[in-house]
Amino acid sequence: MGKTTATKASAIDGSSSISALETFTVQLLCGFGLAFAFWVANNIYSIHLVTHPSKTLLLIWIIELPIVILLYSRYRRNRKHCMYLRAVGRGFLALPVGAAINFLGAIALGAPVTLQYLPKTVNWSLMMSLFTTVPASCVLGSSWADWRRIFA
Image 1 (tube, helix red, strand yellow):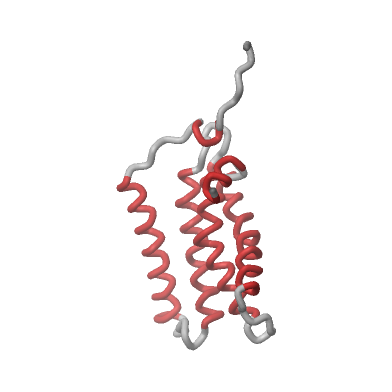
Image 2 (tube, helix red, strand yellow; image 1 turned 30 degrees about the horizontal axis):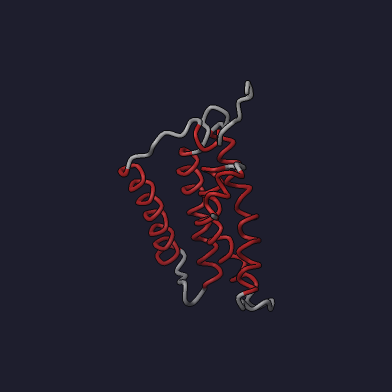
């Protein structure tokens, strides 16, 4: 009777709504970062995705990493308890974790495991982690309620 139960505080506290223009701007900046990475690969390093896939993927995720982490860390949940630098750190920690999950998923779906294709698979996994796991971990952090809501 006198007990109060805590509702999903991480999903409610400190979450301000994001305008459509802000969302579009973040996506546009990430897209420009990707286009810039391809431009650098083609025009400065003279490598292409078809001829040098491993080097091109490596360059793309290295250029795109700070852009994605810095942009998505601005929209972290529960801003009262989570500093900006903590969200940035979570983004850097999520990169290898997401890459390991993507790597195992790629192998389960038939990616070659030989040493010849290993750098390509690893760089692909890192890039996929950058675009899937890193933004979610920068925004949500370690809130199990929010992660369960995503996968529900």
